Amino acid sequence: MADSAAATIGHHPPGHGPADGTKRDFLALVAGAGGAVLVGALAWPFIDSMNPSKDVLALSSTDVDISPIPAGSAITVVWRGKPIFVRHRTAKEITEAQNVKVADLIDPSAPATDAERIKAGHEQWLVVIGICTHLGCIPLGNKPTDPRGDYGGWFCPCHGSQYDTAGRVRHGPAPLNLPLPPYAFETDTKIKIG
Ligand code: FES
View 1 (cartoon, rainbow, N blue to C red):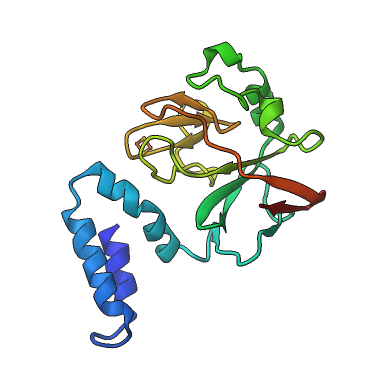
View 2 (cartoon, rainbow, N blue to C red):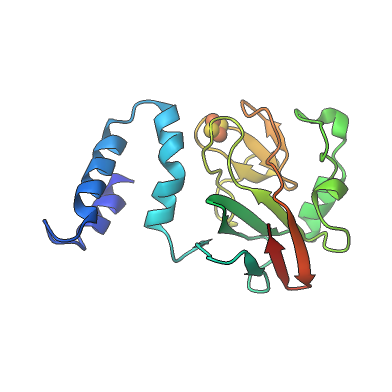
């Protein structure tokens, strides 16, 4: 992580731009971060600043065109400062999510069934707030090549929590399912978050 951060800083000659000092301070924090809490707290701004053009789209609007998202992948959009995962689920991922018994869940509180966590008629789309319910890291799993844990959803590298393809926690220490943001389908290919 420090290598890519250093590469980014290399684009700015020393003393140029107001971000220099901030970035050096940030690097010092990362280098000295022995505590998981600090790493967790920094995870989102770090990802936001280092990979803004890939799977993170910082939208000023909460309208999201979901048509470019291939099945099996998710994107992250920003809503009210929070990362929102919008995942296009495969048929296999939907079936796996539907077959889970609520009684087997770590967090069985509603919305816990797959039907409660998606919009009827749009089963292939899952929209969750992408913040681990343990200490606030951003779980991995949006890209098919990312680690997704044993349940095929997301894996939080901070302390190993795992989420399934409905965003429900299946392996701790996270205690709660990923929350759902308010959203609605405006068309089959466009959602409005908020
Ligand atoms: S923040 Fe600890 S497992 Fe996710």
